Image 1 (cartoon, helix red, strand yellow):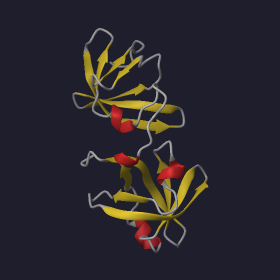
Image 2 (cartoon, helix red, strand yellow; image 1 turned 90 degrees about the vertical axis):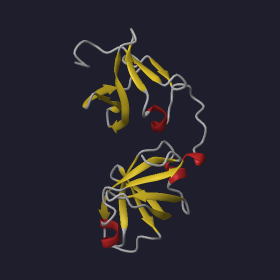
Image 3 (cartoon, helix red, strand yellow; image 1 turned 60 degrees about the vertical axis):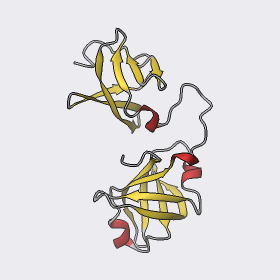
Image 4 (cartoon, helix red, strand yellow; image 1 turned 30 degrees about the vertical axis):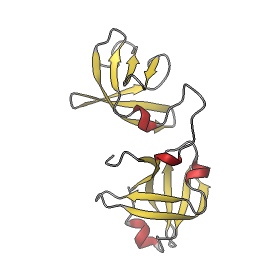
Amino acid sequence: MGQPDLVVVGRVAKAHGILGELAVDVRTDTPQVRFALGATLTARPRDGAQHTLTVSAARHHAGRLLVRFTEVPDRDAAEALRGALLLASLADLPPIEDPDEFYDHQLEGLRAELMDGTLVGTVREIAHGAGGETLVIDRDGTEVLVPFVRQIVPTVDVAGGRVVLDPPEGLIE
């Protein structure tokens, strides 16, 4: 992502209305903290520039979070942020109590290997969908999608830099 001290907490899907409100696809388990009134985030649009934004309002609507930022006064400014990643400081992340839960950034970059140690590739990102999370693994330039469930990913060893896969036949090929 460029800066190791920042983590993705959302992505701007589109502008909403004429007053600069943004429809955001949330990528954090703590949206009430990340998008709280006065919280600051870094926006990284597709052009790679970075902008600091301050939350002035947030509300849920149709499965997304609608967010207003002090620095986004109108629809034109909101449209310019379409597709932008919203990033927050890693230092502000609350600790995870559950040993079976992980932040996306902890998994990205881990080696993915089979039960016998055969290298499959590297975890590039975690895709969040209605059906759950999916590991997106880079296998020599090819994208492999692996459901992030205990039956298929029985071991996550962050300290060891790896995830162990036990895929059903045909999933990896």
